[in-house]
Image (cartoon, rainbow, N blue to C red; front, side, top):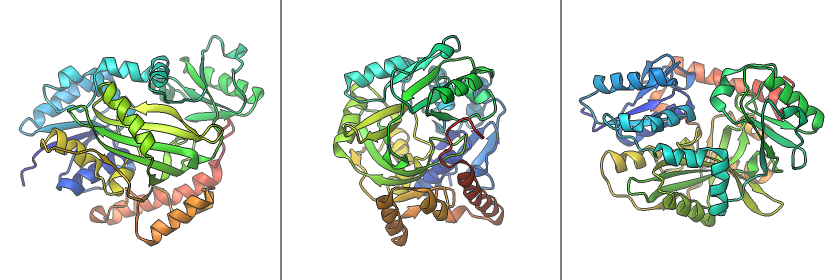
Amino acid sequence: MEQPFLPILLGSDMNAYGMARAFYEAYGIKPLVLGRSHLTATQDSRILNFQQIDRLNEQDVFAPAMKKVAKEYASQNLLLLACGDDYAKLIIKNKPMLQEYFTVPYIDETLMDQILLKENFYKMCEKYDFKYPGTTTVTAEDYESFTPPFDYPIIIKASNSVEYWACSFPGKKKVFVAHDEAEKTAIFKAIYSSSYQDTMIVQEFIPGDDSYMRVLNAYVGKDGKVKLMCLGNPILEEHSPEGIGSYAAIITTFDKELMDQVRFFLEDIGYTGFANFDMKYDVRDGQYKLFEINLRNGRSSYYVTAAGYNLMKYVADDRMLNIKQELTYADNKHLWMIIPKGVLFKYASNEKMKIEAKSLIRQGKYTNSLFFKEDMNAKRWAKLTLNTLNYYRKYKKYFNNKGLTE
């Protein structure tokens, strides 16, 4: 059967699989997945085609590689989508060139700089009345004399995630929590004795476990109007060094006031495409504190599709099939997870949400995006099962360990 269009997904992680699954569920289409390496999530799958391109996340490789792929599939309508931040940035930086070959549902570079550069981001927050955690920065030059302007505990994370991924040191984590002066000093010493010499971001810690987090995924149409918003309430995050801050289980939830506020913001700044917001509910003042905006759908965004709002159908109907869409605020209850139930109920601490999760499981309203009935074979099943069982070991070892110790 002739496909009406071909989605090209950059990245091969669980987000790539969730996106491929959504396209397959909506249209029976198999996307082309491009990545530097082939990760377990997308291995042994018959709902996607994978192509490995070394160093695809580097500019000198990216542009020629994308032209080559475009020529290879020149007879088809190509929709280009990023599964991670580095690829989203590359697409936006190369958008004028890419648009000659692909449909590119992303904002342009000037708007990206306004949103992503931390100092600009906070100005935008002020303007649109988004609250955000107390935040400051530290450099290799001044970290030894640095005293945080707010109370401990504090959050420490890299400003330049690309450089940070490339460095290594004992006890490295995606995000650190320091509880006192000594711990803060030790963390900075460890970081700056590695190859990473860029700025670090220091943030006030907002009290509350993982269930105080909220994640919002939105799709803004080519007409600049929001078409879909879906709010998720994580019950549990990952706790391994490389996974800290990534969601492991989410229940969809609803907050019209928050959705209205985000919708006004996106439409007012002239945004298009996917957007993903991470925030935390602060019991001290009853406000959501915004951490960041990602210029792509979130890593866990299959929770939206699982709840009955196929996220990829929104972008494809709008951009590839020219189908008119009305605004939808998602309000179906659904549990999305990538961890075994045993891990979820052992480590999640919000009792009310655990009861809700059990009820959704009983009703069959739960999904693990990687386990897709129509895409199961012995090899894939064995790998995924092993991977899933591994979470028991990871949580046992790393749960709530966000300091320097291994």
